[in-house]
Image 1: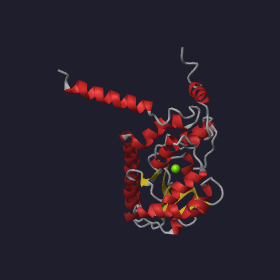
Image 2: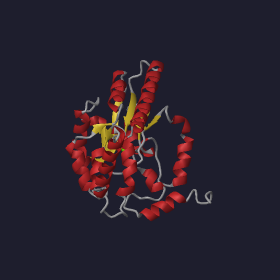
Image 3: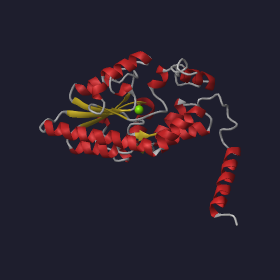
Image 4: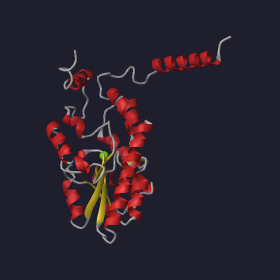
Length: 269
Ligand SMILES: [Mg+2]
């Protein structure tokens, strides 16, 4: 008599062989970026560990805000600045569709996604900003989404989800340069920024895409992480890719393997 577990194993194997024969990526160009984006995307959006990291980040953020407020109970000009993509909004459906279609990031499809205004929140993000609001902090959303193409859609998405302080004056989208420093300075003219949350170093300070420089800047800011800077994980995209030689466009798998082997090849037999 065949045991139940054996039957279950056979069912699983038949499902696996069916899914591998029908893998939507199998017949795509394997030299495209999307294939190596698979693991990063799966981790970033579907792993419990990713979600736990997001909660961890925002829990630390809440603790910090509570502490700051207890030390400065009367001050009314304290501000929290957050990035939007992969900091408070999760773009998993866009990433997944791009991969399944065998395509790369394209501004046209990205704008379309942004203007649908249906992105879901990063775990813990709404509660974090509602907490900030309840303690009297001013909240500003600084994002490199472009005002001209996705301004309304972006604000609508954030508003629909119940994030606090979502009048137009709390959003600073990109109107010219990508660097966020000027936009942070414009907030600092009237407020003191006491905490920033983001998934890219440029969300915290002026950064470069030179590997050694950004590592040095990160180290010089070491004490700020978990205090003034709250970092969210993003293995899918960001300036870290440019810094290791992947400019964000399609790369061959071979060239990626070479980049990966570089720091280690002398240590391996
Ligand atoms: Mg971001």
